[in-house]
Each structure stands twice: as C-alpha cells, then as structure tokens.
Amino acid sequence: MDFETLKAQCLECSRCALAQTRTNVVFGTGVPTARVMFIGEGPGQHEDEEGLPFVGRSGKLLDQYLEAIDLDRNKNIFIANIVKCRPPQNRDPLPEEWEACMPWLREQFRLIRPKIIVCLGRIAAQRMIRADFSVTKEHGVFIEKNGVLFMGTLHPAALLRNPRQKPVAFEDFVALREKILEVCPETYDGVERD
Image (cartoon, rainbow, N blue to C red; front, side, top):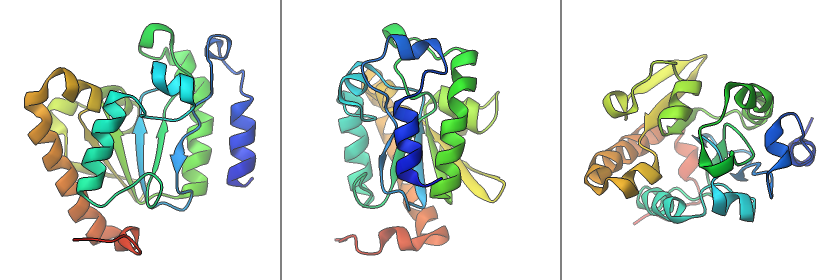
C-alpha cells in the first residue's frame, strides 16, 4: 500500500465510536519520506475542524520550537497522532480507541520509516515508549526500540498551561537537533540554516 492509499482509507475509517462525533479525520501532515516523526495523543477542537494536527495555540508553539531547530512540517518532518479523531471534550482516548487506531499509525511508520520519533506529551510517550514512562522525569532522553530512537517531551499544551517549563522543553528540542545531526543529517539537506 502506498501513502496516498493509506490516507484515503484512513479518512473513511469507522473502526471506533469517535467516527460518529468527528468533523474530520486528522491523518497527519508533513513529508512522507521524513526521518523524524512527531506523535501526539489526538486531535483537539481546532485540529478536528481543520483536519490537520497541532494547528491551535499549542501548534503555533510547536512550530516555533521546530523553526528554532530548522524543522518544518512542510519540509522535513511528519506529524501525526495516536488517534486520528477527536475524543469528545478533548478527553483522553479510551483503550479501545487506541487499539482501533494503532494500525493506521503502524502503517504510517512502515511507509515513512522514521529514524527518530518524538512523543509529544505523557499519553503519546506511554503508548509509544513504555506504559510507565514519566514525561516530567524522562523527557529529552533517547530510548532505542527496534532500531528507532524514541524521545518523550512535554506537550505544547502543557507548556501553555505552565510556561515555566518552556526552557526545559526547549532543551529537549536542542538535544533533538544534535541527535538528528548524528543519526539522520539528511533531514537538514536543502533546509537553509543561519
């Protein structure tokens, strides 16, 4: 299956109850050949309305952090979520919703073949890295799983609620840039740098 076929099938998904309350499926956005992938928990209201991940206030903050380390969702990364439809009232996704949606994310991984995956927030990190992962204690640490490096960092929405954590999260992005230069420097090919 190619990327466009996967996207077309995902946009028609009705595997769980979230399909009944969504406005749009949020498949993901970015470069299908990216070596760096960002994974969030699930779409919020703005994402549901626009059909794109991280487009509200937290998305703007994420874009600022990305820009600071020469990453751009339109040039050299891919951004997706564990669940592709918004849980009502932005509640945490239920286990049956994760399970219904994980095949989409696994297929995205298979086609994109990222070398580095950044989990944005506790829920993404606990689903992707380890069930007892503590994003407040283990953020910025790279963990290898099946030849892919995973890192958990604070969710941009959490940073908006607690701005004192912004410098700590930014350090994670600086560490990410160093790891990209070490593991997949081609990420920066064709990207203008200062």
